[in-house]
Length: 226
Image (tube, rainbow, N blue to C red):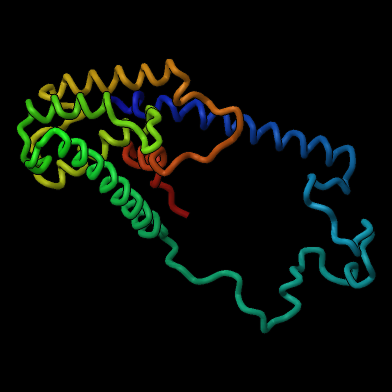
């Protein structure tokens, strides 16, 4: 499936968060222009700070950090390799593996109820296509509620990742041999969106682990270096 369809529900959320952050910055800037001593709610000045600098403070360089007063203090910054790609990659792999195992386990549970004893990677394409179509349509959360559209897409990515690692000859998300299950997945995602699933939330919420891994899977995260 195309990247546009995978991240369709995520783009609006990201734009929403960016707009909200810009609004918050504008509010802070306006308040500071009106009152230089203004601080955001929940961040009061120290009790012993009345807005005036003490003699001790005025004698110190303006840029001096109080931690620098004690030369024996422990460093607040640990040494690391300038390239943090390995750290990012290790965390990405850890999260991806966890998600893949969870989704494959769920599919195996579904196949067990169908009395299918073969490993997923041993099931012929025409049979697996039918299984996947039924799985996408019927799978529910433990509470009985429907999954988010992005969660269904994440399942498809996880299953394909598992099959690829086990030498399966077809890609369930692009091969014409899996056209039926692809159509069912697409239709199910559209149905869920029409029911309000995957819409932009009323308040800021962090991206779920599944959504983050989808962005990694599509190559939209994880390329920056600092």
